[in-house]
Image (cartoon, rainbow, N blue to C red):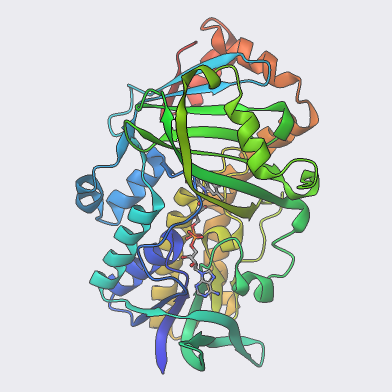
Length: 391
Ligand SMILES: Cc1cc2nc3c(=O)[nH]c(=O)nc-3n(C[C@H](O)[C@H](O)[C@H](O)COP(=O)(O)OP(=O)(O)OC[C@H]3O[C@@H](n4cnc5c(N)ncnc54)[C@H](O)[C@@H]3O)c2cc1C
C-alpha cells in the first residue's frame, strides 16, 4: 500500500495538512488511532487567529453552523486577587473567540479532510519505517494485525505524546518541560457565558486555571502543574481542582448540586528557546508533535492549524519536484521558524519573566489597569484582537 503522503494524527494539525494536500490532488492517507468524533483534553478556546485560518481553509460555514458559544470578554485574576478585564478589540472587524468542544470541533475538520479526498484509516501507528536514514512510511497495528503503509512523505501530527517525535527528534519532548493538566465540564456554577475566566494561582504557579463557558449552563474547567512540581501523594490534580473551587470568587457561585463530568488528564511539552528539528529525510513534524504550543497562553490550535497548512503547501511542491529530502523540507523548518517560532519565543520570554519574578505579576496587573500607564497603552497597541479595559 503506497501513498504520496501519510499523515499520522487527525487533530487540527493533521487534518489541516490533509485538507491542503488533498485539494491539490495529492493522494493522502490520514491515520488516527481514534474513531471520530473523539474527545481531546483541552480548554476548547478558539481564538481569532484560528478562526482566520479556518476561513482560509474554507471551513467558515461548517464552523458557523455548529453554533459554538461566542465569547466577547475575559476576566484574568492575579494570585493576590487583582482583576484585569479584557474585551475583544472593537477596532478589529473579524475578531471572534469561541469555545468549541474538541469532540465536535475536531470532527468538523477531520470530516472536511475526508470530503477533500483524504483516505481515513483508524489504526495505531507504532513507528515510522526508516530505510537508509530516510522515512518511507509507517508500521501500524490495525484490528490487532501489524501492517506497513509506504509513502513518499510523512507528516507526524500525533500530538504531545507523539511516537513520531520520540523517534525522529527524541530531544524535543523534554520531561522537565512537561505540564500535567486536569480538565472537566462543570454544571451548577453561575457564570457569564460570554466571558472566560483565567486565574493565576500561587499553588500551581507558573501554570494557571480556567473557566471557559461552552453554553449558558456548562463550562470547561481545568488547571495544570509542572510534572517536576507534581506530587500526587501530597496533592493530586483532583485535590487542586477542589481547591480551585474554594477560590473566593468561585465558591459563592457554586450550587450545592454542582457536578464536574468527563474529567480527564493530559500533558504537553513547552517549547524551548531553540526551535526543535521538524524536517527530516521524508518527514516533518507539525502541531503539538513539534511542541508548537504558545508557552504563555497554552493556545495550540492556531499553531497546529498553521503548521499543518504550511506542511501541506511545502510537501505538495516537494512532491512535484520528486524531492522530499531533508534539504528540500528545510523550507518547512524555515517557514515555521519565521511564522510560528518567533511568537513562541516572545511568549516564552513573558513566561520566563513570570517564573523568575512571580511577584511582578501584581505590578503588571496594576499598571495595565491604569489607562494612562505606558503598559496599558503599549499592550493595547500591540494586541490586535483584545483591548484591556480596566477592571
Ligand atoms: C489542558 C489543555 C488545555 C488546552 N487549551 C487550549 C485552548 O483553550 N486553546 C487552544 O488553542 N489550545 C489549547 N490546548 C492545546 C491544544 O489542545 C493542542 O495544541 C492541539 O490539540 C494540538 O493539535 P494537534 O493536531 O497537534 O494534536 P492533537 O489535537 O493532540 O491530535 C493528535 C491526534 O493524533 C492521534 N494519535 C496520537 N498518537 C497516535 C498514534 N500512535 N497512532 C495514530 N494516531 C495517533 C490522536 O488520537 C489525536 O487525534 C490545550 C491543551 C491542553 C492539554
